[in-house]
Image 1 (cartoon, rainbow, N blue to C red):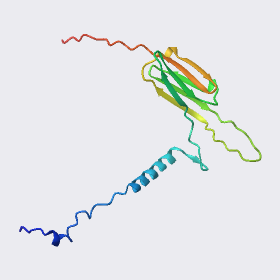
Image 2: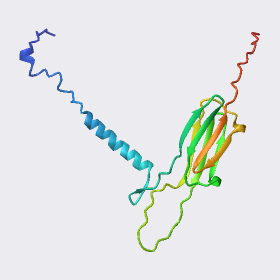
Image 3: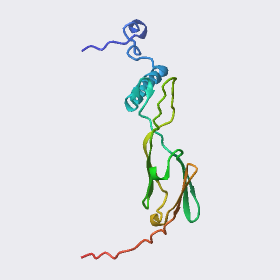
Image 4: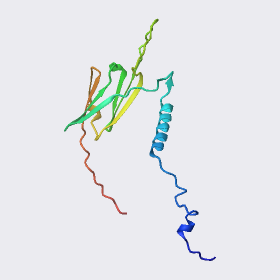
Length: 164
């Protein structure tokens, strides 16, 4: 094989180092991402004649920590006490229920409802353990208030290991 000296001016026409690279278009990438997200939401939320039917409401919550307890407030309007289920473990609170739709019959005219009906569940993890047997609950004017007393932190126990 013979060595040939490279002449950049002569070989410039044959040597195009950036010919294989494509120019990056961030707007094209964002458009692709938006289309994929739209398809994902269309699969997750079924429609019925253009209206979303798969969406149910999720109660919003506020969690406040005091020295002795956690105070949890949830906004659950339009439900009766019997329609709400609250379960507390030492590590989390689970609130579930169902908002049942009211059936109305209207012979003439048009009725549109933007209320969300159906079952819901919200699980809220707690920052530390609570005494789940001593929870105090109050439901008034669509607001659920829970007082969750903090549990004493467990003392670290040490065990002597026998090395055979």
